[in-house]
Image (tube, rainbow, N blue to C red):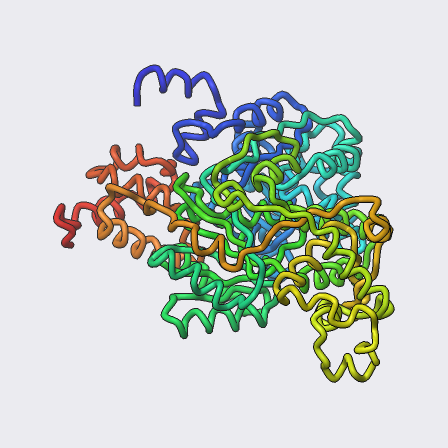
Length: 611
């Protein structure tokens, strides 16, 4: 380390903590600004892209300020992982939560009350009890951090009412700076957080949302499993995440991939904690593993070499989509985000929203968010422009999405749309897309004959076109708000007011021309590996060592060292503790606990790759 760098660290406490505790030489973009606002005693809403290092934005100031920092987090597993990582870094951290027995929680509180604990992680349900708030009010609280702050706006108050209750914190702790952090907040969500949590008195810092290395593509769902397999076959030996809507589909998809020669693991909330941790450790440690998961997987996961994120079903909103695809390409190398999208996805998402125990207004907002996502799926415009525009950023066409690469054609579909609307109207606005298309194609199915629909004027009126085109047109009419799917679960299509206007010829309808398999055939395999120029054998040895140490300590592998740190270690090949201390991500506590072990492993690894 240069004399200048040492001088800067000595003068800037946050830089000293960053290096001595966490082992990093410099801040990522935006981190220092957020920290300075907090250290200046101001409330902060920090909206930062996935992988930008949000946790450090409150962990470093907490250690600089002294006293006790409270961290509010929505998931027990995420809290436990962060506490384990902090402890390995030599920081006094604890969590009190429902997954621990009473004895463990009592012991944790004693450490908090005695001043040993610097960061205390709590779920909102635990924090916002009168007993906990009263006990904390007797302590020196220096900072309050609310992680995944978009939950305040996006989770219905009936589901997590304590998130709504967090607005009381500024009154209970009036002189304590509060930071809310999230990666997924559009302008509406940011305004909601500012109003509810801070009563508008907050410094909002929004960093860029763009992840230009991620190629974006959406494909109509036809044979989902085969489409997924063909996609993965273009990424041999690469790590990826496949998101599924249900636990059952997660397990079925993982089994299907395994049967077809792909190393795949399942992850969902219905599995035992031990099984989830084992699969997570394998994914974090080994190369070429595909994690098939529900949305239960992802928060707090920082694996840099994820080459792709594949959605077998449409996510719930553009915010969720952005957060989930952001787990790809964190090493800066080319990555892909690929989604399958079908009409059934829209109906299922509508059902989920309407079945939620939430206010009418919350449901309306959720439907509007879903409408925005559908529009993103159906657009022929540059996808990155649409995605970034949703978060309030302007962008030029990216050249790295299916629409830019393929120049998706559009056509005037007014005549075809009116044929569909006629069939929907004549059949009573009670039937789904499959039945309406059977009417158009003139198929005398049992259902058609039982209802006498072969007598309708629209029966056979669409025989000039194939089923795939009609299905695409119906989907785009739904996406455009011309047709409304019945949210009650029966799947019927009704004509919206906009559809009536189209039927009268008052407004046009231009549709995206679907070409079967177009995007999948032409997309190129993501280039580059996770560590070009690094001895792959040495890196594998370091990962194996990390996994053994993690199992001994009963923590996830990435808590010991991140992949970025192992890659830097393999590049530097430190031969002594002084050199090991310069590895990115090695702080004082980890140097003491792991330094000799890893230095010895590196020294024992021959330059030719032998051990």
